[in-house]
Amino acid sequence: MTTDKPLNLKPNAPLNAPISKLTPWRVLIVDDDKEVHMVTRFILVNVTFQNRSLELLSVYSAAEAKRFLQTEKDIAVILLDVVMETDDAGLQLTRYIREELKNKAVRIILRTGQPGQAPEEKIIVNYDINDYKAKSELTAQKLFTTLVASLRSYDTIISLEKNRAGLEKIIECSDSLFQISSIREFASGVLTQLSSFLDCKPEGIICIKSHSDSELTGNEDLLLSMNVVAATGKYSCYLKGLGEDCGDKTMREYVQKSLRERKNQFGDNHTVLYLESYLHKATIALLHSGLKVDVNDRKLIEVFASKISIALANVIHYQKMISAEEAATTDFLTGLSNRRQLLRQGIPLLAGAKRNGTHVALAMLDIDFFKRVNDTYGHDAGDLVLKQVSTSLKERFRASDIVARYGGEEFCILALQLDKKQAFELFDSFRAMLAANLVDIQIEKLAITISIGVTTVLGDCIDTMISQADALLYQAKQNGRNCVVIL
Image (cartoon, rainbow, N blue to C red; front, side, top):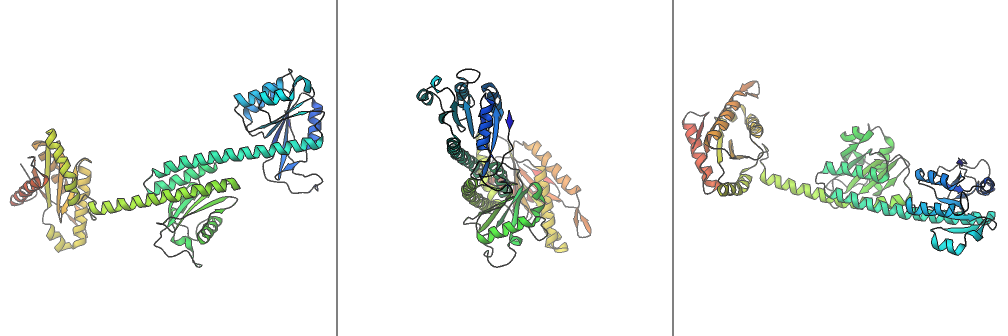
């Protein structure tokens, strides 16, 4: 097999004409006659189509062509002789290309010096070829016309296939993005999917500007108000922001332009998508593509960008719902469940335990002399003590247990599968552990003790058990505090 270096010279063009950076069309000549290769090259060497030159490749038998086509997937046109090793070698090669290699895109032009051995009507009907010419009739002009028509068909087929594959990727990517509920996970997923779509390294950033911020007008540096929520590859260092110290000045310029013009930007090395939703006025996805995106890809990317915008709006809406839910069920200071959440989760939990005959322990816990801490050291010190106790509770009890701040310095713990002995050992060991860990308050180290009332008597409802545990907690305080009273 031989190849000519691709040229980008139109007929009669000057020798110093600029060389195109576009990939040349690859044309494979399959013929056992070396003179046919020479003549074909002489005719086609300076041909260009759509500003792309030709790369002429030569093989001299059907067997050699088979081996070549097994590894080369981007051949646009094959100029194929019919009679080579056998009288139908070219026809069998055609069948091999279409049926075994499953290559429907390459344009196959059959050329024969003995048309009587392979009648045109039979060949056209029985074989998936695109043109059939006798070598005697294939003048330079006809060869040029036939080749250009084949290249145009090939280009159309490849574009359609690329669009189909691109749309499939968009659907696939959109499905995965719609399943993500975290903003940061979503942002990282967008960069990964975009890089996969453009077949490049996932290097880029996603930054968001809230709808509540000022409008994107004027000459201010818009990037200072952008929150970078994801950064990958060589852009990982930009998670801190896109200020003037950002090393990639070109990137900043593209993002600024996209924000001001409210549209996508495509450069030789950057692809910037402008996304807009009713929740966020400006969201920018920047991808360092390392290649120039063609027109077809740009259209597909715009479709993809619209899907990303919808998915982003869903993620933000979900996050707001979660935030509202957390605000309604979580104690803002300690991060524990609040009283409302304790009752909401505790009612069905106790009902299930009653049906199944499962042991239940409910404890009410109170920090000893907490008012004295507030009066002596201030409310900030009191908050610090509450946080310390809350952290210890989170670490000591199981994820299946309900740990809640009931109110003030009082906490409630609901735990399943603990009998009276196990419950006493658990809560008494926790009390001792907490008393042993001193809390740094200002310049002092303060010992924190707690009193605990625990009931293991399964009541009719959670309110009954809370009342029982609260009465036992009062007994613990009457007994001198820093102890556990259990029923």
